[in-house]
Length: 279
Image (cartoon, rainbow, N blue to C red; front, side):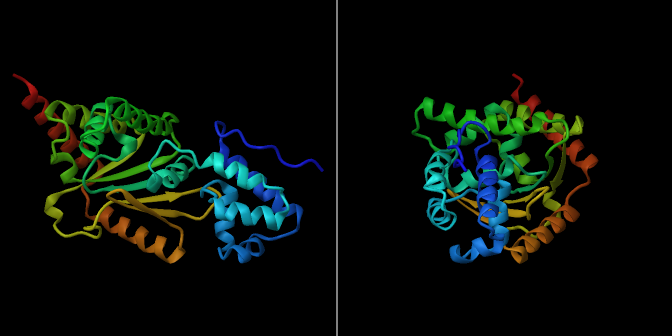
């Protein structure tokens, strides 16, 4: 039987890699648990690789080639898949986000990347990298706007965002940029493409005081949680840990303003910024 073809990284590479992994595993008669044992990972982790919700790292690729007798296929293509437009700490989360059926986010300090307008994204990246060239900033902004094409589909994924009121009040890029950014979020909600809630200052202490949280659900794989900090991030797949983060999100949702009231506040703050920008 001919071996699998090397992947083209430009065309759904992780899904293709996952399909090839499932084919090769079933060919030698191993279950997901049996393949996971020598790798010291769970069967559910193998399932996530096969579903394309987790990235295959080089150390696993080499062992899988040895176990399944795939003649270096996964190692070669793993190197191609490692190329990403996103920072290392976020690349795997961005790839999982692209195949998620539901995305739930709590944003503590800034508008989530999928909801950022161009000028806002540019101001954020310039603040992160004050000495970077314009070409570097342009590339970062382009990658962020490309991510937002996930929302081009009218229904999938379902995106539910909870914005801390600090997100609305911190003037990123100036009044004009903030007016545009908040109007962009409001319009997505008015078009019924996303659900947005605002966690007001009057809610006082809440369940995620330490920072942002992203929850990802998939049609054919277990859920994931992504915890992000300055230049770092961690994708969690442990069921107990993910369940705890899901409870955190439910508590945040209960403390936030209802969607209708949240839109009223978003619109009001956007109008305030727009008036402030007038001569």
